[in-house]
Length: 242
Image 1 (tube, rainbow, N blue to C red):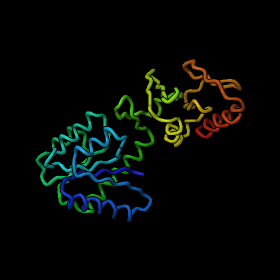
Image 2: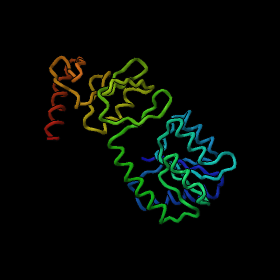
Image 3: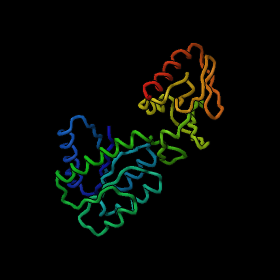
Image 4: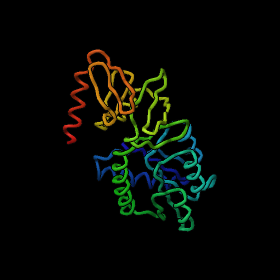
């Protein structure tokens, strides 16, 4: 599923873009878009900043009455948002400014379905590659892109969870262990160890019936009866990889 945000203070333009996105999904039924519309840049910024909303792609009009799209994009970047941004505008005047906020595309209205569909094809291909390498987490109130190969393990700390990175950084998350595992379980190197840990198999130095030893020297003690299944996962991972 992809979260798509549309922001334009002209309702007619908003509906045109939404209709084209819906037409794209009709031609690509394997693609699932969840589209949320905003007629105010401030509403979009508020939802991303306060409501844990992480759109994959934002279509943002540049000329809006309350706040220019370039300014809104800069505020989003300052908040830590790494959403892809496509600007929609009636003029090429701000094309250079778009690159300053790391926009992926600058489209001049009226936008045809052919052009929009081509942009979406490229966007989806890039996102699929990125999703293989990163996850997005809210750390200290900011959205942070965390490379998967930097994650050693995750440990439960009461109502918080702590992700330990290779460089020694500790990221405290206000998420449940189940929510974190739902993201990481998409990648075969991550396994659940009891209810308190998720471990990256790449960083296991050795294991036995009592504990896992990571290559940093950290030991994680195994719940009773967990060793057999864990050993099978460990060897399956390395045998299949080889």
